[in-house]
Amino acid sequence: MRRKLDFRAHQKVVLPNGKTIHISFIHHPGAVIIAPLINEDTVVMLRQFRPALGRYIYELPAGTIDLPEKPLTCAKRELLEETGFSAKKFKKLGEIYPVPGYSTEVIHIFKAEGLTAGGAQPEDYEVIDVKQFSRTETKRLFQQGKLMDAKSICAFTHLGWI
Image 1: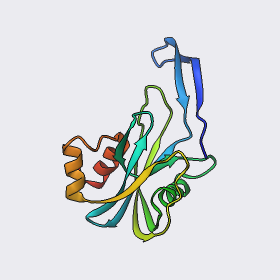
Image 2: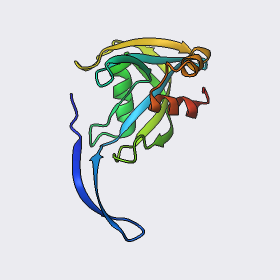
Image 3: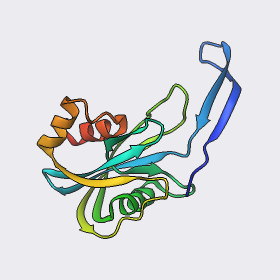
Image 4: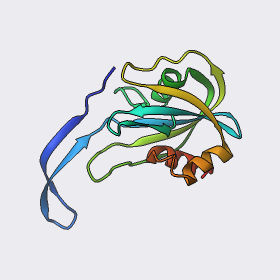
C-alpha cells in the first residue's frame, strides 16, 4: 500500500526569538528501520532499487508507519514483508530525525534477533534482493562508499558496527 504524506506549504511559525516566518514542511507519520541479526556477526540487508536515485542501494529493511500502527508493529510487518524473516526478539535502539529541516519524520531504530525464515512479500513498487553481510563486510561497504543510506548508517552506529 502506498502511503500519502501530508505536505503543508507556507505555514506561519513563531520562533523562540519572537520572529515570525513562513515555512514548508512534510508532516510525516514516522518510520522504522530494523537491523535483523542472523547472529552476532551477520546482518540481513537489502539491495533495493530506489527510483528517485535511478539505482540500487544497500540498506536495512525499513518502512513508514501506517497510523495508528505502533512502531514495533510496523517493524515486525516491514521485516516480514521485505525480507521474509520474522523475529523472536526486538529491541529498540533509538530514534533519529532524518531531515528535520523540512519534515516531522522520526525513524525508530530496532534490532531484531532470533530470526526465522519465511517468504518475503514486498510491495509492487519494491525491487529488493535480500542479502546477508558479516560485520566486516558491512564496515567495508561503508568505508568504500557503497553503504550510503543515512538511516542504515545510523542504525549500524547504534549497533556499534561502524
